[in-house]
Length: 123
Image (tube, rainbow, N blue to C red):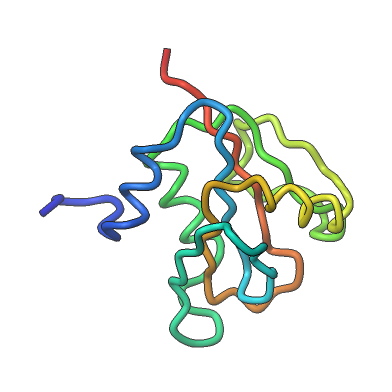
């Protein structure tokens, strides 16, 4: 058992398996998941777990080269302050999810609370 940090076994495995350029999507409860893309459903009721808590926990566990968010979201979140972030229309973000290694669905009910994390390398 880990003393701290992320405890979800499958999410930890996906992060550990991710290679440079792989896409990990942290999503609100309503983002459609394309067929064939793995989904890790963390949601258990409206708002739980919240998007920002899941995003920060995932960021603490991996190296992120850049992020992509939807213009409709209103821009960036503080958790992404040190990560280069591209802003695209929501339809383009949804197209990007087709290439995702995984979509991590939160209980967030705020529209457009989605981010595509592009895996980086630690060297």
